Amino acid sequence: MSIGNNIKQLRKRLKKSQEEVANDLNLTRSSYSGYENGVAQPNLEVIIQLSDYFQLTIDSLLKNDFEKFSEKDWELLNKRENGDVKGTNLRVLTSMVNEENEELIELVPLKASAGYTSSYADPDYIKVLPTFTLPFLSKDKKYRSFPIQGDSMPPVVEGSFVVAEYIQNWMSIRNGTPCIVVTKDEGIVFKVVHNFIETNQCFQLCSTNTFYEPYMVHVKDIVEMWKFVNYISPQLPDVQMDTKEISSTLKSLQKEVYALKNTWTKS
Image 1 (cartoon, one colour):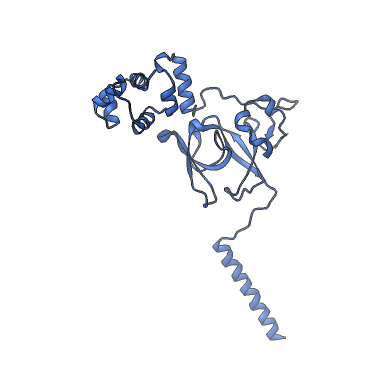
Image 2: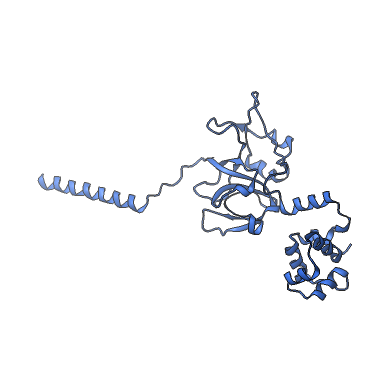
């Protein structure tokens, strides 16, 4: 197995000629042909280009033998690399129900949140989580409650729990939607998301606290997406008046002071 043979198989699946791929990569045809035939080995910069072009990780590009791949292998590779963003394939979602067979809301405690990324589909993990119900939520949707850490999403403060709705089709997520995003590297994060699936196979994750910079997460690194519904907090959010409210309050105070002055003058 070599990277040359792998890129040959990938090119053929795209139904492109060597010249077309070379032009797309700004390489000469002879250079690209040399890589495919094993006459020359691409340097790291070219390997990164090939990885981006074929939309595969460098690890997948170097460690697999695509010549031996069956159609099922290609399907699994594509699912692993790009994710099932439309939710057309079955996603395993373990859920708890009550005696009436109605779904309960599982609450992921802070202590259990570290293991959620690896155990979210494990019935033994899910069944020991605390559960509750909220009668005003739809019975046709799946909800779960997640712990919030840090100060990146005010007014939702650390120690709060976000109740969120499970999202099967990630393509449906609109820009500016607050979501619980479960990622392979960071675990559970609560962010405002912007959808760049069609252009970059990514979501941009933003905080309401402007101290934190937005960042991109590829769909292949996302395990689950849950849309914000409400939150349970041990603290009242800070009440901040806008300019009109402040102006109105000042005018009201001025009237009261004026009235008091008139009272003192008459007395």
